[in-house]
Length: 355
Image (cartoon, rainbow, N blue to C red):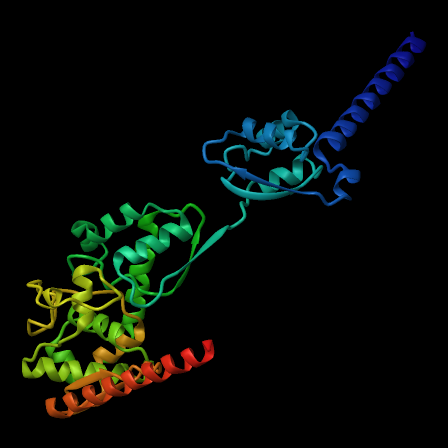
């Protein structure tokens, strides 16, 4: 009897050892890294789409050689109680790294960002086009949101459109961000930028933020040199104070979305309230998104007696400023003649070079 019991215990222990050995082997084989494969450092990029279940994910990783068995990974995810915590997104696995390592990575998707650079002076449509080309978002939806008064009010912006409020900057967005996320971030950045504005007493008492942004958008289009923004803003404030038309061609260009080439007489006579050639005061709203420099210049302009300015047209981007209309006319004539002479001189040099 004792002999039988000893034999039974021996067989039981052998079976238990075999079972433990099988478990250890299975653990190492199916869950731990394949050292030979891992040593090759073969990187495998994988995108987990939203809605992919744990079994689908497990089979995908097995098919790519990241784990030896899709079932082993699936059951490990269940055992570790993390099957419902898998993130959608991009991952970089090492071929053969095993189920445990792979399961851990599935909880931390890589942050993939897209960069969007919006320049000063862009309109809503130009911003939408740039965002669509760089981020593959719906440009039509972008424009629609910028004109949606209920959405704009929910953002806390007192305007009928977001023209002027899409702050120009370099942005980073998570991959697959939609139009609404982009608009929200740009308007939030606008608020941040304007929170620290310095206002002159006269501007603060006479204009609200929307009016300052409207003027800033014109300054943005007129001032090529940052050093001239304050002076140009000062000229416009002087003209507003005297009830003169601003006479800013960029407002006419905005009406027709004609941003290059000469303006026709019929265009300059447009009945649009945006036409500051014909009408006094500010236009109904901004004509583009100004940068912080133009906004600050409009909120606290230079103190100047100037009432006019004209582009030098010498390639420098500079303007010549005048106090009186007579002085302004003389400078315009002088600059026009100098420009004509410059063109003739350059044309003559070009002809000599071809002989």
